[in-house]
Image (cartoon, rainbow, N blue to C red; front, side, top):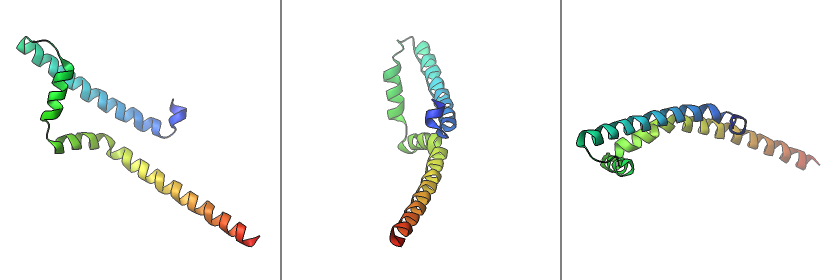
Length: 99
């Protein structure tokens, strides 16, 4: 799969590790709460409650924290790709006009 994703494979590994860490922290916290309260472990409901209880700014920061670096790489890649396409168009335009 690394060959398919090219330069994005390394970024994907970094994101995946961070997301897995956050999920494991959340699961551990929910398990401790369920055990402490003697209740059943309803992870889906507890996770939904935690997300709904989060402040929008905090949730946005959590998501952007994972993706900020990747957005920068995508922007740079888009700029380079746009510049190359512009150069190719300029060259093709000169070739067509000179014929």
